[in-house]
Length: 199
Image 1 (tube, rainbow, N blue to C red):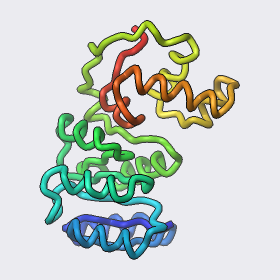
Image 2 (image 1 turned 90 degrees about the vertical axis):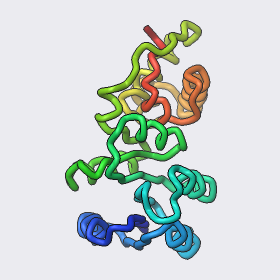
Image 3 (image 1 turned 30 degrees about the horizontal axis):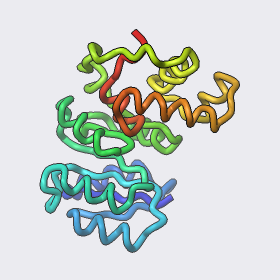
Image 4 (image 1 turned 60 degrees about the vertical axis):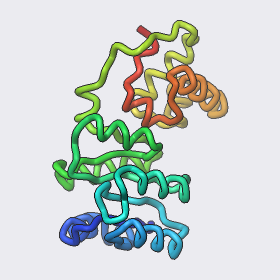
Protein backbone atom coordinates (compact mmCIF):
# COMPACT_ATOMS: atom_id res chain seq x y z
CA UNK A 1 0.00 0.00 0.00
CA UNK A 2 1.12 3.54 -0.76
CA UNK A 3 0.91 6.01 2.13
CA UNK A 4 1.60 9.73 1.91
CA UNK A 5 3.25 11.24 4.98
CA UNK A 6 2.44 14.95 4.89
CA UNK A 7 4.19 16.78 7.72
CA UNK A 8 6.74 19.58 7.77
CA UNK A 9 8.79 17.95 10.55
CA UNK A 10 11.24 15.52 8.96
CA UNK A 11 12.01 13.72 12.23
CA UNK A 12 8.32 12.93 12.70
CA UNK A 13 8.04 11.69 9.12
CA UNK A 14 11.06 9.48 9.75
CA UNK A 15 9.34 8.03 12.81
CA UNK A 16 6.16 7.30 10.87
CA UNK A 17 8.14 5.77 8.01
CA UNK A 18 10.01 3.47 10.42
CA UNK A 19 6.69 2.37 11.90
CA UNK A 20 4.95 1.73 8.57
CA UNK A 21 7.69 0.23 6.41
CA UNK A 22 8.28 -2.35 4.99
CA UNK A 23 4.56 -3.14 5.11
CA UNK A 24 3.81 0.04 3.14
CA UNK A 25 5.56 2.26 0.61
CA UNK A 26 5.75 5.79 2.00
CA UNK A 27 6.00 9.06 0.07
CA UNK A 28 6.82 12.27 1.91
CA UNK A 29 5.54 15.83 1.65
CA UNK A 30 6.38 18.88 3.75
CA UNK A 31 3.83 21.37 2.36
CA UNK A 32 0.28 21.35 1.09
CA UNK A 33 1.48 21.76 -2.49
CA UNK A 34 3.91 18.84 -2.16
CA UNK A 35 1.04 16.75 -0.78
CA UNK A 36 -1.13 17.54 -3.78
CA UNK A 37 1.78 16.80 -6.12
CA UNK A 38 2.34 13.42 -4.50
CA UNK A 39 -1.34 12.58 -4.86
CA UNK A 40 -1.20 13.42 -8.54
CA UNK A 41 1.93 11.26 -8.96
CA UNK A 42 0.39 8.40 -6.95
CA UNK A 43 -3.37 8.28 -7.62
CA UNK A 44 -3.47 4.75 -6.18
CA UNK A 45 -2.50 6.02 -2.72
CA UNK A 46 -4.25 4.01 -0.02
CA UNK A 47 -3.89 6.39 2.93
CA UNK A 48 -2.92 10.00 3.71
CA UNK A 49 -1.43 10.97 7.07
CA UNK A 50 -1.46 14.77 7.23
CA UNK A 51 -0.56 17.49 9.69
CA UNK A 52 -2.87 20.48 10.10
CA UNK A 53 -0.14 23.10 10.34
CA UNK A 54 2.05 22.52 7.29
CA UNK A 55 2.98 25.48 5.08
CA UNK A 56 0.09 26.31 2.79
CA UNK A 57 -2.61 24.73 4.95
CA UNK A 58 -4.31 28.03 5.98
CA UNK A 59 -6.12 26.58 8.99
CA UNK A 60 -8.64 23.98 7.78
CA UNK A 61 -8.75 25.20 4.17
CA UNK A 62 -5.93 22.92 3.06
CA UNK A 63 -7.65 19.94 4.64
CA UNK A 64 -10.88 20.80 2.84
CA UNK A 65 -9.00 21.14 -0.46
CA UNK A 66 -7.40 17.70 -0.19
CA UNK A 67 -10.72 16.10 0.80
CA UNK A 68 -12.44 17.75 -2.16
CA UNK A 69 -9.77 16.67 -4.66
CA UNK A 70 -9.43 13.12 -3.30
CA UNK A 71 -12.62 12.19 -1.42
CA UNK A 72 -12.12 8.43 -1.80
CA UNK A 73 -8.68 8.21 -0.17
CA UNK A 74 -8.81 7.69 3.62
CA UNK A 75 -7.20 10.63 5.39
CA UNK A 76 -6.02 10.73 8.98
CA UNK A 77 -4.95 14.01 10.55
CA UNK A 78 -1.90 13.63 12.80
CA UNK A 79 -1.45 16.84 14.74
CA UNK A 80 0.06 18.34 17.88
CA UNK A 81 -3.35 19.85 18.62
CA UNK A 82 -5.42 17.67 20.95
CA UNK A 83 -8.12 20.18 21.86
CA UNK A 84 -11.56 18.52 21.49
CA UNK A 85 -12.98 21.44 19.49
CA UNK A 86 -10.12 21.38 16.96
CA UNK A 87 -10.55 17.62 16.57
CA UNK A 88 -14.32 17.96 16.09
CA UNK A 89 -13.87 20.60 13.38
CA UNK A 90 -11.35 18.41 11.55
CA UNK A 91 -13.66 15.39 11.77
CA UNK A 92 -16.54 17.48 10.43
CA UNK A 93 -14.65 17.73 7.12
CA UNK A 94 -15.10 14.01 6.50
CA UNK A 95 -11.68 12.68 7.45
CA UNK A 96 -11.32 9.06 8.53
CA UNK A 97 -9.58 9.74 11.81
CA UNK A 98 -7.59 12.12 14.00
CA UNK A 99 -4.47 11.13 15.93
CA UNK A 100 -2.88 13.62 18.38
CA UNK A 101 0.91 13.56 18.22
CA UNK A 102 0.92 13.09 21.99
CA UNK A 103 -0.11 9.47 21.35
CA UNK A 104 2.55 6.77 21.18
CA UNK A 105 3.55 5.25 17.84
CA UNK A 106 1.92 2.02 19.03
CA UNK A 107 -1.35 3.88 19.57
CA UNK A 108 -0.99 5.52 16.16
CA UNK A 109 -0.50 2.12 14.53
CA UNK A 110 -3.69 0.83 16.16
CA UNK A 111 -5.60 3.87 14.94
CA UNK A 112 -4.27 3.40 11.40
CA UNK A 113 -5.31 -0.27 11.51
CA UNK A 114 -8.83 0.80 12.55
CA UNK A 115 -9.12 3.19 9.59
CA UNK A 116 -7.70 0.69 7.10
CA UNK A 117 -10.30 -1.84 8.27
CA UNK A 118 -12.99 0.57 7.04
CA UNK A 119 -13.91 2.23 10.32
CA UNK A 120 -13.37 5.73 11.69
CA UNK A 121 -11.00 6.57 14.53
CA UNK A 122 -11.95 9.22 17.07
CA UNK A 123 -9.47 9.80 19.91
CA UNK A 124 -10.43 9.61 23.56
CA UNK A 125 -9.85 13.36 23.90
CA UNK A 126 -13.11 13.90 22.01
CA UNK A 127 -15.11 11.02 23.45
CA UNK A 128 -14.32 12.04 27.03
CA UNK A 129 -15.52 15.61 26.45
CA UNK A 130 -18.50 14.87 24.25
CA UNK A 131 -21.80 16.58 24.83
CA UNK A 132 -24.33 13.83 25.42
CA UNK A 133 -27.27 16.23 25.83
CA UNK A 134 -27.99 16.28 22.09
CA UNK A 135 -31.50 15.82 20.80
CA UNK A 136 -33.27 12.46 20.93
CA UNK A 137 -34.95 10.99 17.87
CA UNK A 138 -37.87 8.76 18.76
CA UNK A 139 -38.51 8.23 15.07
CA UNK A 140 -35.75 5.60 14.85
CA UNK A 141 -37.07 2.07 14.59
CA UNK A 142 -35.76 -0.62 16.90
CA UNK A 143 -33.53 -1.99 14.13
CA UNK A 144 -32.19 1.50 13.37
CA UNK A 145 -31.37 1.90 17.06
CA UNK A 146 -29.48 -1.39 16.94
CA UNK A 147 -27.50 -0.13 13.94
CA UNK A 148 -26.83 3.17 15.70
CA UNK A 149 -25.45 1.45 18.79
CA UNK A 150 -23.12 -0.69 16.67
CA UNK A 151 -22.01 2.39 14.73
CA UNK A 152 -21.03 4.03 18.01
CA UNK A 153 -18.88 0.97 18.76
CA UNK A 154 -17.03 1.61 15.49
CA UNK A 155 -18.40 -1.44 13.69
CA UNK A 156 -18.20 -1.65 9.89
CA UNK A 157 -21.24 -2.22 7.68
CA UNK A 158 -20.27 -5.88 7.20
CA UNK A 159 -19.82 -6.40 10.93
CA UNK A 160 -23.23 -4.85 11.57
CA UNK A 161 -24.82 -7.06 8.93
CA UNK A 162 -23.26 -10.17 10.47
CA UNK A 163 -24.21 -9.16 14.00
CA UNK A 164 -27.85 -8.39 13.16
CA UNK A 165 -28.23 -11.11 10.50
CA UNK A 166 -29.42 -8.66 7.86
CA UNK A 167 -28.19 -7.86 4.35
CA UNK A 168 -25.45 -5.35 3.62
CA UNK A 169 -27.85 -3.24 1.54
CA UNK A 170 -30.27 -3.07 4.48
CA UNK A 171 -27.45 -1.95 6.78
CA UNK A 172 -26.48 0.82 4.35
CA UNK A 173 -30.09 2.00 4.25
CA UNK A 174 -30.31 2.10 8.06
CA UNK A 175 -26.93 3.85 8.34
CA UNK A 176 -28.12 6.55 5.93
CA UNK A 177 -31.26 7.06 8.03
CA UNK A 178 -29.26 7.29 11.27
CA UNK A 179 -26.82 9.83 9.82
CA UNK A 180 -29.66 11.89 8.38
CA UNK A 181 -31.51 11.85 11.71
CA UNK A 182 -28.35 12.93 13.53
CA UNK A 183 -27.82 15.75 11.04
CA UNK A 184 -24.35 14.55 10.05
CA UNK A 185 -22.82 13.29 6.80
CA UNK A 186 -20.37 10.61 7.93
CA UNK A 187 -19.60 8.08 10.64
CA UNK A 188 -16.69 10.17 11.91
CA UNK A 189 -18.98 13.17 12.31
CA UNK A 190 -21.49 11.01 14.19
CA UNK A 191 -18.79 9.77 16.55
CA UNK A 192 -17.41 13.27 17.04
CA UNK A 193 -20.82 14.73 17.81
CA UNK A 194 -21.68 11.71 19.98
CA UNK A 195 -25.34 12.24 19.18
CA UNK A 196 -27.67 10.61 21.72
CA UNK A 197 -30.46 9.42 19.45
CA UNK A 198 -32.03 6.71 21.55
CA UNK A 199 -32.30 8.08 25.07
